[in-house]
Structure formats: structure tokens, C-alpha cells
Amino acid sequence: MGLKRTIAVGATGVAAGLVARALVREMRNGEGEGSHPEGWKSVTILGDSADFAVDGYPEPLRDLAPMLEVRVDRAPGDKGFEVHARVLHGSELPPSVDDDDPERALRRALRDAKQVFETGEVLRATPRPHGHRPSTVFGAIVDRAEDDAKGEGVL
Image (cartoon, rainbow, N blue to C red; front, side, top):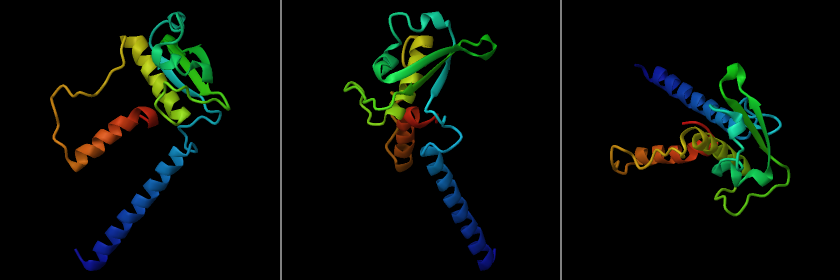
């Protein structure tokens, strides 16, 4: 491969990386198509909606309930029900929540409440059933992505 072609391929790769980084930033700022303009976050849960709020919401959502507006609707095609929630303006996170971003705390609480309602527990990827993975640079990156996935998006 000639020098000119190598430089062109490298420049194209750098340009693609910059475009991808800009798109990721745009989505994280809430301007992407994955964000609802009014701040609603939703999760579809398999089960009967009448059982969802018995004795209050499941534990992960119960801690945030005073600062939320929650709506429960039937899911399309009788596939359970949908829980829609958004943070009320001016609300502060309760001290029991170990997160400083209300939107991220809400996403995590909705996902955990779904798991508690459907399985009875919050499912965890760690400790890994196959044992301890040695610490490497790329392994640390994957571990960090797994830790952030619940609050930011699905890994």
C-alpha cells in the first residue's frame, strides 16, 4: 500500500472516530432520539399491573417514589404492563440513593424494579460464575462499562 493511500485511510478513520464521538455526546446530552422530550423513562414488565403497587412499589423504585410522577399502562398486545416515570421538577434525591444524577438513578430504579417484580431479585453480573478474571487494561474498561450500563443504557 502506498504512502498516500495509508494517509487517506488513516485520515478517514480519524474522521469516523470524531463523528462517532460527537454522536455519542449528543445522545448523552439528552438530544438524541433515545430521550423523551418531557423526561419520561419507561419499562415494560411481564405480569399483572394490579400486583405492581401492592404494598408500594418494588424496593428499588420505592426509595425514589416521593420525587417521581409514575404512570402505569397496559402494554401493547397484552404483554404485561408499562411503567412510565419522570422526576418532578425541583426534586432532590433522597440520602439513601448513592447517585448524584436523578435521571440515571431513575433509569437504574426502573430496571431494578422490573427485575424484582419478575424474578424476585435484582440480577447481578458479578461475581462472575466462571471465577475471577485477571486485571488487564481492557478488562478494566469492560468492568467499568458493565458498572455504568444500568444507569446510562444497555450494554
